[in-house]
Length: 463
Image (cartoon, rainbow, N blue to C red; front, side, top):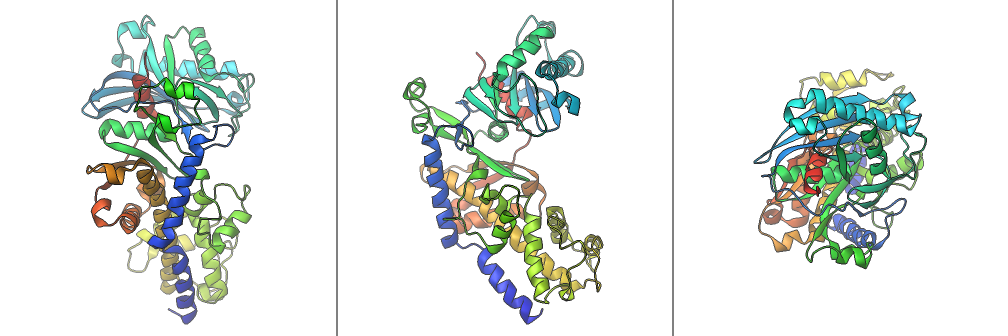
């Protein structure tokens, strides 16, 4: 490897391989943001959003409950059979929302949802319900994971705000989601009650608590990042005193932290590459923390670093390959392939690079340099994701008040599918907490937060 490459790596490593001293101000900053969010009203762009969910499952619950998960494109309506002992069986009907549905009358859109629910109950999962439930003589409980802004005032009440993601429905904004859903169910003759509105991160925490009741953190680490954890109600001073006093002493409420919007340049160790990415983003100065680590941004950070190696003559013979100079032209999936490639002549990596036009063919040393850059970016991502976990552990004082394993339910493609991500996150937690405590922090794959989590919350919050 050339002297120019060695010098550049020494500089990059000093910025991307975060030491305990470099992690400390970030964790401190996050805890300060927790405390600020607990007292700041959840209006508009907010953090520490109350879910009004005050129970977690113990894994022994049984019964069949409904859930609905609506994202930017797909609607999933599920019948979730809780079988006890942490086991579930899920049947779902999945439909894609057309442009006509997304831009038409709200009543038509919600009728479409009701039709999907009816198909599930009367056809796909009919055998999971009693005759009284199928014939609408008995009420079915529904939990809704609504991936759009909602001003939530209770576990089952929330005003729909401007939706985005291509949705411009008539007569929906400013109306209560439960009222809109119940009106559609009534029009279709369904006896279904929406009794829980949830965020997918809260759903992830609840879903994993069913399989492991010791779960205290739900983390989503994918194209973005977010987390949820339980907080004593008396600490959530953004809620009125009357509201807080209405809960029994010692009650905990699950909070959607919206940790993706945490972070300021006064405590985040932003590099010049982070600043370049942010400056060229369509939402500069927003989600600075998420831009440093999530799957949506890792590839671009790798590309920006690689450009400096090319300009120094340390990569690709000093020539920028055609196509590589374009922003976002090196996706995070490429990084994953580079790190996984154990073929003798790095054939898979060469295949990825064949998408660009080179002056001279890339060498094995070029691939080794690019892979090392990928490793540095991904290692920092793991450390920064672990910062969120460490901050939530400290906020709950779990590291001092229990000798049990600390369970974190983690969902998301970046965590699940990026190579070595789990072990890198554990390494960062060990750097912060030491060996003995970090060995008690267990990161476990959590799935189906929208479906299983929604059904569980519907069950926990029923009358």
